[in-house]
Image 1: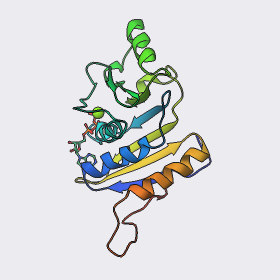
Image 2 (image 1 turned 120 degrees about the vertical axis):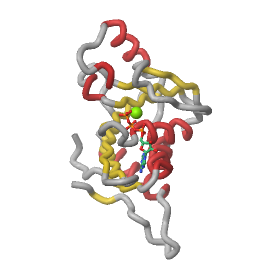
Image 3 (image 1 turned 180 degrees about the vertical axis):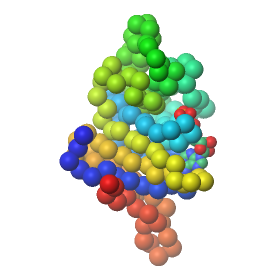
Length: 176
Ligand SMILES: Nc1ncnc2c1ncn2[C@@H]1O[C@H](COP(=O)(O)OP(=O)(O)OP(=O)(O)O)[C@@H](O)[C@H]1O
Ligand SMILES: [Mg+2]
Protein backbone atom coordinates (compact mmCIF):
# COMPACT_ATOMS: atom_id res chain seq x y z
CA UNK A 1 0.00 0.00 0.00
CA UNK A 2 2.85 2.36 0.82
CA UNK A 3 6.63 2.29 0.61
CA UNK A 4 6.78 3.70 4.13
CA UNK A 5 7.04 1.30 7.05
CA UNK A 6 3.90 1.10 9.16
CA UNK A 7 3.77 3.04 12.37
CA UNK A 8 3.29 0.41 15.08
CA UNK A 9 2.49 1.29 18.67
CA UNK A 10 1.72 -0.95 21.63
CA UNK A 11 -0.99 0.09 24.05
CA UNK A 12 -1.69 -1.34 27.50
CA UNK A 13 -5.17 0.04 28.23
CA UNK A 14 -8.27 1.16 26.32
CA UNK A 15 -7.51 4.78 27.15
CA UNK A 16 -4.18 4.51 25.36
CA UNK A 17 -5.84 3.14 22.24
CA UNK A 18 -8.41 5.93 22.40
CA UNK A 19 -5.55 8.42 22.71
CA UNK A 20 -4.08 7.07 19.48
CA UNK A 21 -7.43 7.78 17.86
CA UNK A 22 -7.29 11.32 19.18
CA UNK A 23 -3.81 11.73 17.70
CA UNK A 24 -5.00 10.40 14.36
CA UNK A 25 -7.83 12.95 14.37
CA UNK A 26 -5.24 15.69 13.90
CA UNK A 27 -4.72 14.43 10.37
CA UNK A 28 -8.32 13.96 9.33
CA UNK A 29 -10.71 16.16 7.41
CA UNK A 30 -14.06 15.75 5.67
CA UNK A 31 -14.02 13.17 2.93
CA UNK A 32 -11.34 11.04 4.59
CA UNK A 33 -11.96 7.38 5.20
CA UNK A 34 -10.17 5.30 7.82
CA UNK A 35 -10.33 1.50 7.78
CA UNK A 36 -10.02 -0.43 11.04
CA UNK A 37 -9.03 -4.08 10.89
CA UNK A 38 -8.70 -6.57 13.70
CA UNK A 39 -10.56 -9.32 15.53
CA UNK A 40 -13.65 -8.95 17.66
CA UNK A 41 -12.77 -6.94 20.75
CA UNK A 42 -9.44 -5.77 19.34
CA UNK A 43 -10.26 -2.14 20.12
CA UNK A 44 -11.46 -0.69 16.83
CA UNK A 45 -14.48 1.06 18.31
CA UNK A 46 -12.35 2.21 21.24
CA UNK A 47 -9.96 3.94 18.85
CA UNK A 48 -12.83 5.48 16.87
CA UNK A 49 -14.27 6.86 20.14
CA UNK A 50 -11.02 8.67 20.86
CA UNK A 51 -10.89 10.09 17.35
CA UNK A 52 -14.53 11.15 17.36
CA UNK A 53 -14.19 12.95 20.69
CA UNK A 54 -11.21 14.84 19.32
CA UNK A 55 -13.27 15.73 16.25
CA UNK A 56 -15.83 17.33 18.55
CA UNK A 57 -18.37 14.55 18.88
CA UNK A 58 -20.04 14.70 22.30
CA UNK A 59 -21.87 11.90 24.05
CA UNK A 60 -21.71 8.18 23.58
CA UNK A 61 -20.45 6.50 20.47
CA UNK A 62 -21.91 3.02 20.28
CA UNK A 63 -20.91 0.20 17.98
CA UNK A 64 -22.73 0.27 14.66
CA UNK A 65 -22.54 -3.53 14.28
CA UNK A 66 -26.29 -3.99 13.97
CA UNK A 67 -27.15 -0.70 12.34
CA UNK A 68 -24.41 -0.68 9.68
CA UNK A 69 -23.83 3.07 9.83
CA UNK A 70 -24.14 5.80 12.45
CA UNK A 71 -23.52 9.50 12.00
CA UNK A 72 -22.42 12.05 14.59
CA UNK A 73 -22.15 15.81 14.48
CA UNK A 74 -18.83 17.14 15.65
CA UNK A 75 -16.71 20.00 14.33
CA UNK A 76 -16.92 17.83 11.24
CA UNK A 77 -19.54 15.14 10.71
CA UNK A 78 -18.28 11.70 11.70
CA UNK A 79 -19.61 8.53 10.08
CA UNK A 80 -19.03 5.19 11.78
CA UNK A 81 -19.59 2.19 9.53
CA UNK A 82 -19.36 -1.50 10.28
CA UNK A 83 -19.18 -4.24 7.68
CA UNK A 84 -19.42 -7.05 10.21
CA UNK A 85 -23.06 -7.89 9.67
CA UNK A 86 -22.67 -7.54 5.90
CA UNK A 87 -20.52 -10.66 5.72
CA UNK A 88 -22.58 -12.50 3.18
CA UNK A 89 -24.28 -10.07 0.86
CA UNK A 90 -25.26 -6.42 0.84
CA UNK A 91 -28.69 -5.13 -0.05
CA UNK A 92 -28.54 -2.34 -2.66
CA UNK A 93 -30.30 0.04 -0.23
CA UNK A 94 -27.70 -0.71 2.40
CA UNK A 95 -24.89 -0.01 -0.01
CA UNK A 96 -26.50 3.30 -1.02
CA UNK A 97 -26.75 4.23 2.65
CA UNK A 98 -23.12 3.32 3.31
CA UNK A 99 -21.90 5.27 0.31
CA UNK A 100 -23.93 8.29 1.34
CA UNK A 101 -22.51 8.12 4.86
CA UNK A 102 -18.93 7.68 3.66
CA UNK A 103 -19.14 10.60 1.26
CA UNK A 104 -17.21 13.86 1.04
CA UNK A 105 -19.17 15.48 3.86
CA UNK A 106 -17.81 13.37 6.71
CA UNK A 107 -14.77 11.75 8.24
CA UNK A 108 -15.60 8.05 7.97
CA UNK A 109 -14.40 5.17 10.11
CA UNK A 110 -15.07 1.69 8.76
CA UNK A 111 -14.81 -1.40 10.94
CA UNK A 112 -14.67 -4.79 9.24
CA UNK A 113 -13.88 -3.15 5.87
CA UNK A 114 -13.14 -6.56 4.34
CA UNK A 115 -16.88 -6.99 3.77
CA UNK A 116 -16.97 -3.72 1.82
CA UNK A 117 -13.82 -4.16 -0.25
CA UNK A 118 -14.03 -2.13 -3.46
CA UNK A 119 -17.40 -0.63 -2.58
CA UNK A 120 -16.30 2.48 -0.69
CA UNK A 121 -13.77 5.23 -1.46
CA UNK A 122 -10.13 4.30 -0.91
CA UNK A 123 -8.91 4.66 2.67
CA UNK A 124 -6.50 7.44 3.58
CA UNK A 125 -5.32 5.45 6.59
CA UNK A 126 -5.61 1.74 7.35
CA UNK A 127 -5.35 0.72 11.01
CA UNK A 128 -4.97 -2.82 12.23
CA UNK A 129 -5.12 -3.84 15.86
CA UNK A 130 -3.80 -7.11 17.24
CA UNK A 131 -4.32 -8.73 20.62
CA UNK A 132 -1.01 -9.13 22.44
CA UNK A 133 -2.38 -10.80 25.57
CA UNK A 134 -4.36 -9.24 28.42
CA UNK A 135 -5.00 -5.57 27.78
CA UNK A 136 -2.05 -5.16 25.43
CA UNK A 137 -2.70 -4.35 21.80
CA UNK A 138 -0.46 -3.66 18.84
CA UNK A 139 -1.90 -0.84 16.77
CA UNK A 140 -0.52 -0.34 13.26
CA UNK A 141 -1.13 2.66 11.06
CA UNK A 142 -0.54 2.64 7.32
CA UNK A 143 -1.28 5.81 5.39
CA UNK A 144 -1.61 5.71 1.63
CA UNK A 145 0.53 8.84 1.20
CA UNK A 146 4.08 8.93 2.56
CA UNK A 147 3.55 12.52 3.72
CA UNK A 148 0.58 11.38 5.80
CA UNK A 149 2.65 8.59 7.27
CA UNK A 150 5.30 11.07 8.37
CA UNK A 151 2.69 13.38 9.90
CA UNK A 152 0.99 10.49 11.66
CA UNK A 153 4.30 9.41 13.14
CA UNK A 154 4.75 12.92 14.56
CA UNK A 155 1.19 13.20 15.86
CA UNK A 156 1.47 9.84 17.61
CA UNK A 157 4.91 10.54 19.06
CA UNK A 158 3.62 13.77 20.58
CA UNK A 159 0.57 12.04 22.04
CA UNK A 160 2.41 9.19 23.75
CA UNK A 161 3.03 9.10 27.50
CA UNK A 162 6.67 9.47 28.45
CA UNK A 163 8.90 8.14 31.18
CA UNK A 164 10.04 10.60 33.79
CA UNK A 165 13.42 10.84 32.12
CA UNK A 166 11.70 12.06 29.00
CA UNK A 167 12.31 8.97 26.87
CA UNK A 168 9.33 7.73 24.89
CA UNK A 169 7.72 4.71 26.58
CA UNK A 170 7.34 2.70 23.40
CA UNK A 171 7.30 5.27 20.68
CA UNK A 172 6.27 4.67 17.12
CA UNK A 173 8.72 2.53 15.27
CA UNK A 174 8.90 0.86 11.94
CA UNK A 175 6.84 -2.27 12.07
CA UNK A 176 7.31 -5.35 10.04
N1 LIG B 1 -5.21 -1.73 25.03
C1 LIG B 1 -6.53 -1.78 24.74
N2 LIG B 1 -7.00 -1.10 23.68
C2 LIG B 1 -8.30 -1.17 23.35
N3 LIG B 1 -9.23 -1.87 24.01
C3 LIG B 1 -8.83 -2.56 25.09
C4 LIG B 1 -7.46 -2.54 25.49
N4 LIG B 1 -7.36 -3.32 26.60
C5 LIG B 1 -8.57 -3.78 26.86
N5 LIG B 1 -9.47 -3.34 25.96
C6 LIG B 1 -10.90 -3.70 25.97
O1 LIG B 1 -11.14 -4.43 24.77
C7 LIG B 1 -12.45 -4.12 24.28
C8 LIG B 1 -12.36 -3.54 22.89
O2 LIG B 1 -13.66 -3.37 22.41
P1 LIG B 1 -14.01 -2.62 21.07
O3 LIG B 1 -15.49 -2.54 21.03
O4 LIG B 1 -13.24 -1.37 20.96
O5 LIG B 1 -13.47 -3.68 20.01
P2 LIG B 1 -13.78 -3.79 18.45
O6 LIG B 1 -12.48 -4.08 17.80
O7 LIG B 1 -14.51 -2.59 18.00
O8 LIG B 1 -14.69 -5.08 18.38
P3 LIG B 1 -15.86 -5.47 17.33
O9 LIG B 1 -15.19 -6.14 16.17
O10 LIG B 1 -16.71 -6.42 18.11
O11 LIG B 1 -16.57 -4.23 16.94
C9 LIG B 1 -13.07 -3.14 25.26
O12 LIG B 1 -13.81 -3.85 26.22
C10 LIG B 1 -11.85 -2.51 25.92
O13 LIG B 1 -12.10 -2.03 27.22
MG1 LIG C 1 -16.36 -2.34 17.07
